[in-house]
Amino acid sequence: MKKFKVGLIGFSIGGHVFHAPFIHENPNLLLYKVSARKPEQQKMLAERYPEAIAVLSAEEIIQDPEVDLVVIATSNDVHYSFAKSALEAGKHVVVEKPFTNYSWEADELIALAKSKGLLLSVHHNARFHADFKTVKSVIASGRLGRVVNYEARYDRFRNFLRPGAWREESLPGSGIHYDLGAHLIDQALQTFGLPISVFADLRVQRDEAKAIDDFEFILSYPGLKVSLKGQMLAKIPTARYAVYGTNGSFVKWGVDPQEELLRDGVKPSEYKNWGCENEEFYGQLAILENGQDVNERVVSEIGSGQDFYKNIVGALLAEEDLFVKPEQARDVIRILELAELSSKEQRTVSLAGELIS
Image 1 (cartoon, rainbow, N blue to C red):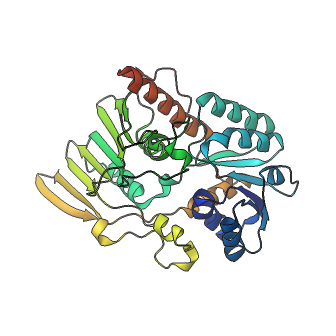
Image 2: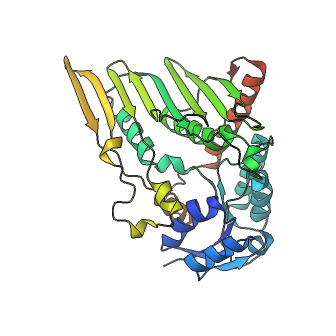
Image 3: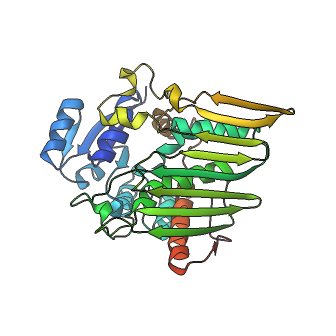
């Protein structure tokens, strides 16, 4: 069995929650080296993955000839530079979302990977969430009829700022629109394809806040409005998804259960019902079907974050097409750039000729 040696750059929440568990559990991957600079990170690494080698710098991973795949789970500001260095060193690369801060950086990385014949992908793991998989399945079933409105939200409540957190600073790539909004944009593109225009409203609402903490994107399609929202002052839970079609509606509450388990240090193999939502979060479908009113609960699809790295292995072995293509992740960044322009100038921005996937 081919086993690819993985170098993981970053072992804060991104690295130890969203990447290390799935890398460790994939039989074709070896968590070989991990950059962990803080003592508490080094302690956790030694306890959870004693076979992994702890290092202090990204260069110790990028320049190691034993490393096959470099995974970049750092703050957004170094995604581009680390990915470029890794590709130049001949490594396959996975980058945590958002891909880069600017679309020109993404374009450059895509061209570099192609010129060297290397795999380049972006960890858009929300494609594997139970809630989104369920919504996408309901839409694909056709039971809603022609979809005319699609609403998706990432609402949270935290009315205070985290001291020293880079996401709280007014920097390129900071703010919840780049963090949470990138997930929602990617999901919309995977469901409906590329829009014709975008309008955005970006705000800073919390006391003393510097970075965007409230966003709304409206993506326009022929006959369809896609509304994507997120905020940090939602004390009462809101519906995660609401989809309206010519036959009726589908509303979905709750949050995919995988992240909570991962944050608690639980791996997929250690939990029998991995990715399964509680019945209380099953979506509600209300439609007019064959002249009859139909109201039913829709059993949620199973969340499967492990499928991302299964596909990475399949692509490395030339057995599968890459599921998250870098061109798709680049389009997410370009929409974010145009959304910032839209909000600044308070106008709708056309995407004609802007996107490449």
